[in-house]
Amino acid sequence: MIRSLALLTATLPLLASAVPAFAAAPAAPHVPAGVAAGYAVFDRQTGRLTAHRDAHRRFRSASVVKIMIAIDYLESHRKVPARDLALLKVMLRVSDDDAASAFWDRGGKGRIIERTARKLGLTDTAPPPADKPGFWGYTSLSALDTVRVYRYLLDRAEPRVSDLILGHLRRAGQCGSDGFDQYFGIPRGVARPWAVKQGWSGYGLRPPVRCRPSSPAAPGAPGSPGSQSVPVPSAVPAAAEAPAPPGRPAGAPAPAGPVSGVPVPVAPADAAGPAAPGSAPRIVPDYGRPVLHTTGLVGPKERWIMVLLTAYPAGTSWQRSTSQITRLAREVYRAGTS
Image (cartoon, rainbow, N blue to C red; front, side, top):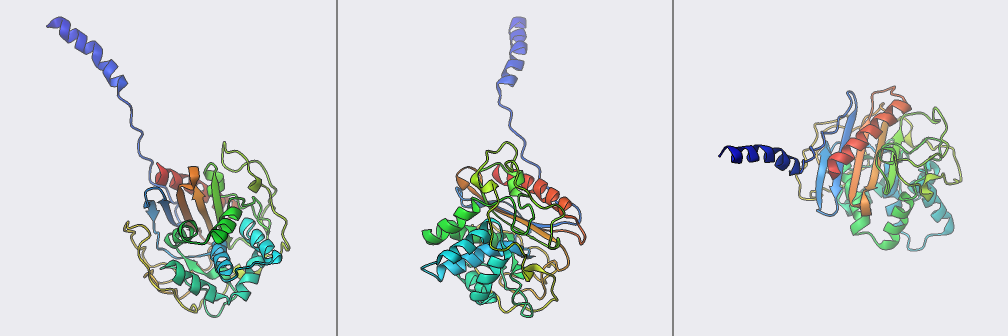
């Protein structure tokens, strides 16, 4: 009996060491004080949202709306002339504002957003205020609607549309045509492969330090052709994202169902008024605050759609904003993919 107890005592530590240790679940992403953040991570393999916060909260779109501008243009033009192919390239790869303004004017301005929202079933998206119809960057959208836009490209759009748009996003250049470094958020916080469309507004017309293409973005990630800037027809930023007085939008899209059957809480009313699905904001969301957005496809075989939209206190520097969104993007990615 004594010998059996001794053997058992000696064996227990060995058994304990043989039991695999389960990794702790990642901590919830920490949103810095004073920062408004809405995010969503969608797992294309399971068809479910795996992480979300204030996913219905409206933000002003900044350059994220350029994906919708491209969809609307391509689906209304079976044949695309070489000049427009060049404009699409710089609009999507290096976020050229003049290219976006050209398509915006030709497509009927806010009617682009109305058409796209109806077709894609976007519930939180609305055109810019009626008194600023040329300001495409004042389109209102949410993290959940942006997930829907990517899902449309991946699952429903014609290959000629999805291949062109996503092909350019997979080759997003480090330097925007306005000189800002657009490798923040996903490009700096998540290892490749990724395809991204970034957005920024409220940081002035010129960056504090003009971007120069550098080493690969995410730590330990291999380089790619997209790490270099793309020549653009004009580096002068359009006025599409400059401050404007508040006003009523031209119209609002029709409501649609949830993205994946997973209930997503509706955020409290924000600066744009109540966040009721399908309603139009009374004023520009986060008017007077700089915004920074990082969106795209991440992970092996582009398994996840990740959208992170943020707004910062007035006067927040570019360096501080990009540092915070990159840290937050890393945490959102871990929370949504673990």
